[in-house]
Image 1 (tube, rainbow, N blue to C red):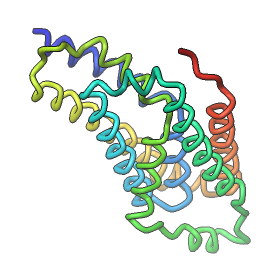
Image 2 (image 1 turned 90 degrees about the vertical axis):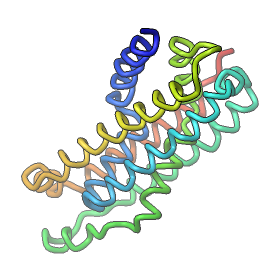
Image 3 (image 1 turned 180 degrees about the vertical axis):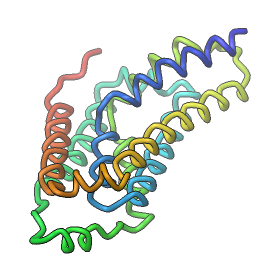
Image 4 (image 1 turned 90 degrees about the horizontal axis):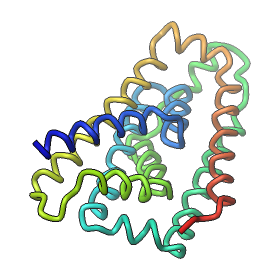
Length: 210
């Protein structure tokens, strides 16, 4: 019964967490609109794979250590904030195409490896994630919980993550929706790029609380 209760708690909280706009959401949206459905899906896979890192150290109790270590959080904040600002600057550099044909031609999918890597780094370098996992697992993990229960929780969270971002990708790549976005694609790239820069700056400028 404890396992089912924990699963329900994780499902409810994690759905709310992934649906909340953040670095992962902005990156997947930007990649889908700029480089197409494949790039968006590969980026989503990268984000999901990033969860394996957080799940692994959380299962071994390291989330609490990282979340309560000012030095560790500072390093992650520098890396994560800097990476978001870098992605944001790339978005701000987007320019309008002279014609719709040129715009379509411009949307060449990035390599699979690059798209997955971008998603992976975006998720792994988010300094808020250790705190999130520490809070979430504190609610459901018990000292005597079997390892296969923890593994199932982790796989379930990865499935939720991948399903949500895949839905976002499919929505934004729908022909009618995508066509409307494409008409002002460079503006959307700049808006999303600006949002990522603001998120990066927020991470860098927000003081860690112990």
